[in-house]
Length: 130
Image (cartoon, rainbow, N blue to C red; front, side, top):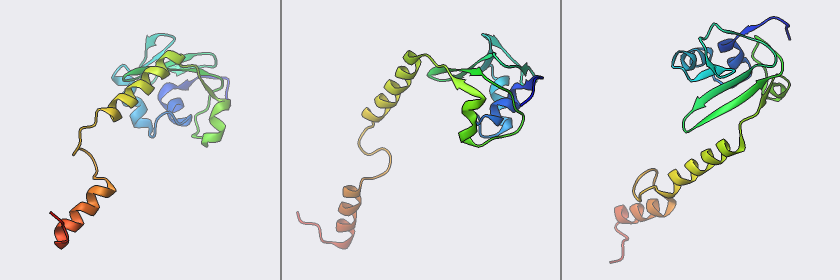
């Protein structure tokens, strides 16, 4: 916990929003991260009270900085440092997109089902009944 600012890329990594610091830096370079509605570079310093927007298509996640830290922490500690304030309609859009992608999966794409595997084994063993 510190009163001075922390680099945005280091903070996003520390509160586990990105798996690596280089991924957080890359997101900043691509313009996907903004603080108080202003796009930022990875070297931008943040402070308590800032609101961070991270664009993750198809939605924009919004977080409020409760405290700052440069050290990566366990997942159980992150609620003390950052609060998810993403609007509910954004989360609904994410859920709809997830459901739509699952519902429109054409047969034959993706992994075979257990039934498909059994049918293939029967065909290979010659036990297929026509």
